Length: 332
Ligand SMILES: NC(=O)c1ccc[n+]([C@@H]2O[C@H](COP(=O)([O-])OP(=O)(O)OC[C@H]3O[C@@H](n4cnc5c(N)ncnc54)[C@H](O)[C@@H]3O)[C@@H](O)[C@H]2O)c1
Image (tube, rainbow, N blue to C red):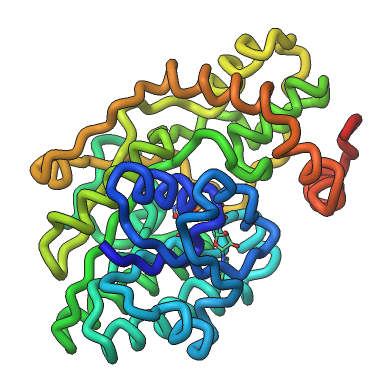
């Protein structure tokens, strides 16, 4: 397939691009703004086989150029960190909503298939049971609200213009190359460096963990076999409270639980996310990686790939961390 992959230099997008180029021989153009979260290094292994366009999804000229002769657009591009959306929602509105609109217009003009990568956070928090695709949308942060707005816009392009759209909503992803502001890489790198591990509130927020390659495969299945106009949930096989995740990481890193430091909870922090994936199971997808194995291999990857995270941990991320947590990182 000839694909335009937006946000393909980020954590999940780059895993998707690697898999599509290697396993499906797709012709891929990546359009990416290279924000703090996007890195060319993430595409190093497939660099000779793809076209890379440096540009923003909210820029119609860059999108038209990048679209070339693509048959489908897969949109990963987003501002993705909830904490940053609380302190500065503007970028989230620009990229997640305005950017999605520009992509939809290009898809409409050219009659392209359109797949929007979305998140379980659009449903909000659930105490018991799991969300299905019929559950009401009830986002609680500016991040999830802008993702929800984008999902609704995508759905409207199917209903109004007949555009062949799909939405794939993933639960919390983890794996190699995730920017260290997110829970799992944050805790791994702090544990390896002997820095304290900042745990929000009581640490009992439950997340449904999905290995990044499983999500990439799920998105591929929706792209190939999803029914136009439909949304598909893609949830991980295991749920766990954050504090248990942190304890497992400490043990895998050979670090002591005394490094745990409880810090003030995130405002409006959702307690539990949980997705039912039975609709996507019906298309033949199921998660292959259990959390225990995926977490161990992720810790190994960060331990073995300091070249990837050292430039991040010694750069602007240090200032962000200090500002956000009110304490400095010990080491780079
Ligand atoms: N990380 C998760 O747990 C998770 C779970 C479910 C869904 N998602 C969704 O998956 C997608 C990818 O998430 P991720 O964790 O890989 O994010 P990420 O932050 O690692 O990467 C985002 C990528 O988008 C690029 N980008 C940002 N703004 C852009 C713009 N205006 N134009 C072009 N490119 C831009 C960045 O440079 C980066 O390469 C997002 O849409 C996110 O909402 C993430």
